[in-house]
Image (cartoon, rainbow, N blue to C red; front, side, top):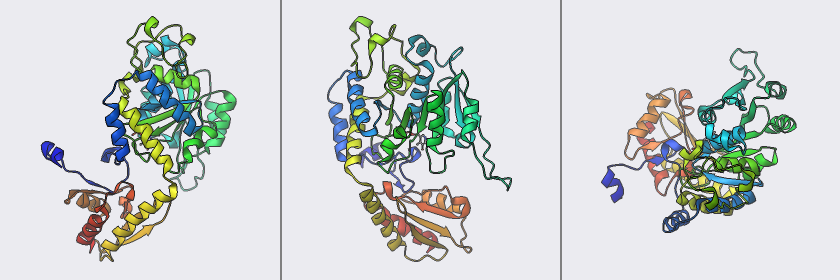
Length: 394
Ligand SMILES: *Cc1c(COP(=O)(O)O)cnc(C)c1O
């Protein structure tokens, strides 16, 4: 605890899940040990990324892959790769995309806060489809033909955000993208578990897929994976690595960077800002191995055990009702009663302002529903949550 005393910072109970705002999850001891060992040696960074590429290709089914400083960094690098290809002059000019393919097609209902990473490459997002929901009569979202109709000679990529609610289905979008030879980038940042999703998006026809390493994989908080086709990954890593080196001295591993396909070395690229450290690479690869050694069933059962302890400590409440909601990740869901003096958001704030601070999932707070995600709870946290719920609603 002395580190926290030194800097006067108090850890929180994280019942929100591995979100960035609440610092992701925990490092397994093996991951922390791998990061420590990485910090005790020096390496050629291109060789480290080539080793990562072999592992990522193996677990995703893609031709290649790199460790990134998060899924959002993967979206920037992936977009930059689709725009610049293997042309060092284009790499060097980004984010000025004058005269280049500089449009990325996105279904309007999939626009989100993370697509700033796509725009950072210098492209314009072209929205398609009208998610007709509120007018009363609406049943439709974007359709594959609308994506096809938006493709033209300036189209650099199609961006798809993987989610159970995303429309149209990925397979339908991939059919359009693949038949028109337009690269398809998938944001799958938070689509793990199930572990089978590591392969699903490439298998469905994506050219690039970005995962967060700091969420369910359990890697360093600022880590991620970008997997995809060999040429796109070569372009992405060229725009990420530090390239302060002379051509004659430069001998990157050909499996990741085939230098003889380049007319020259680009200067530091647009993704040099998303630097990836050696600790991050070793940590992510170790976390990935542990994630795959675990099973979805074990992850579910650990979550259920936490959620049951919240339920048994909270007992029956007076101004709210609590219930376990089953799913691939079980949750404890509190629904405020009519007689509850607090609104959903006020209850979230009260949880946050208690000691220790408890951060729950506020996404349904407007409906008087607060849910507790067990994936980042430590020993004793479930009981602390249950006791606090008794104080607030008992
Ligand atoms: C979390 C998330 C991201 C960003 O992932 P980082 O690893 O934090 O960069 C991008 N897209 C979606 C849909 C996410 O949930």
